[in-house]
Length: 257
Image (cartoon, rainbow, N blue to C red; front, side):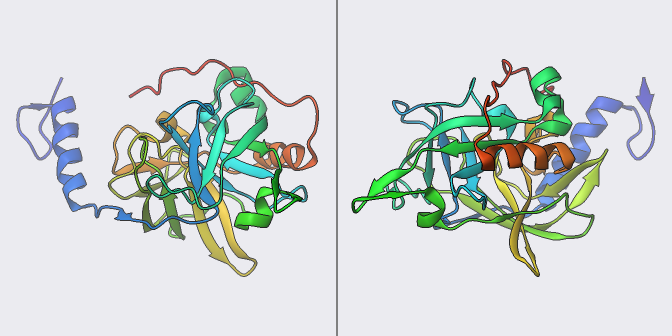
């Protein structure tokens, strides 16, 4: 089928690509970041030299809770490793081992992109002879709710790799078919799970994580989040309480790109 609006004779698919490239050229890039204590790289296991997702510390009564995208979770999450504030080979706040994962029912049953949010717990470490939870070392963001159109967020994430630095962007939220969205180039593979941080009267809060539609997006210049709604809050409460049994992520499906 041909379309004549603005480009005579171009097929619809070709027109979409043309518009996407022109739009991408106008979108500003993310900036290099020196790292943030609350945000870090997420590794599949302790042996892996390469990280493939991003996570962040969210305040909880247990002091041991992270938030990321559900599609980043491998099985029950146990043995994954979180390295907050990593920059290059430097790990200023240590390496923390995941002990459990907590998911929304929609992700467990059908990998629903509206439920692409996960909470992880990490084991305490002995620091200077004292049992220490991660929040005591890095601090934490509060957990907020789905952002509205036009609200400003700061997003920091780790492109997939081994000893690379994070990127960051301050941008405005808009909505795409119910999914919070933002435009900023440079959020490539590995930045899934990156927190969307909004400054509120109660302090900085996480209002989204890169994920959701197409597991975060098909292009590096537009990223999405699942809504942070009631089921996400319920998963957070279970993680904060250390509820048992915890959850097991289903096998990862394609992103639809």
